[in-house]
Structures are given as C-alpha cells and as structure tokens.
Amino acid sequence: MNRHCDRSGLTLLEIVLSLALFSIAAAALSQLAWNGSRATVQARLKTQATIRCEAKLNEILAGVEQMTSKSGVPFPDDSHWSWSEVVTPSSHAELVQLDVTVSHRSKSRLASIDVTLRRWAREQTIFVQGATQTKEEIEKMEARTQ
Image: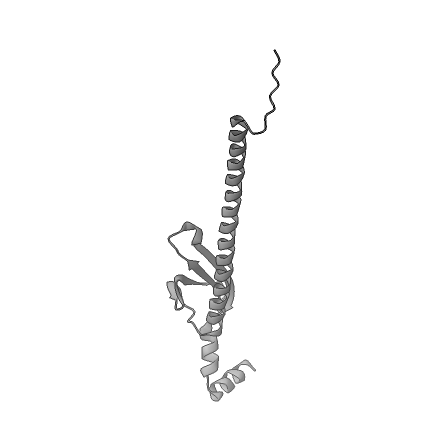
C-alpha cells in the first residue's frame, strides 16, 4: 500500500533549524554592531583628547599657562577631562622637553583614554627676561658682544 501525502507546511525539524540559523545570524550582527559602537566612541574620544592636548600645549607655549610640571588639572568645562604637564630639562640650557597628557576618565573602561603630545620648546624665562630688559641693559649686552 503506497500512501501519497500532499503536505503543505514545515516540519518541526525545519522550524528548529531555521530558528537556530536566525539566532546565530542575529548574535553575529549584534556583535558587529557593538564593535562598531565601541570603535565610534573610542575614535570620538581620541579626537577630542588630541584637540584638547594641542590646545593646552599651545596655551603653554604662548605663556597663558606656566611651563611647570603639574598633574591631574581638570578642564573647567568638563570634570571628566584632565591634563598633566611634564617639563624635562635637556642638555641645552635653553631647551626643555614638554610632555602634555590629556586624559578622559569614566566608570566605563570603554570611555577612558589618554593622549600625550611631546614638543621641544625654549624655556619661558628667557622670553620673560628679554621682554623685561630695559633699553640700557640691551645696549650694554650689545656693547659686550662687539
């Protein structure tokens, strides 16, 4: 006896397999989305840290901030951001190595970042002394060199 059934539908096995494939695909896509989100946050913070670091370094070089070592100074606009400065003398009397580090601290490890910029600069006291010298002192120094 040959029974011929005309089925129109899915078996339980086909449904379970399709649900398993869908779950695996959804998990992979959610992992990709999370990685993309993490990379976006890290890139945004690194860009902001670099901009803040360059601005602070320029303030120091312009004389707005003193060229002295300090650490953990918060930015006035956001307390999550802080900056540090390390001034290291070099073998040349008028040059110093200036390291400025900007840090962002958060409860999440994902949102914590440090960026350091290093620049060689002339000692600020040389410029201050030159600006405060009187005309007579300058003439005396020029006379000695001639």
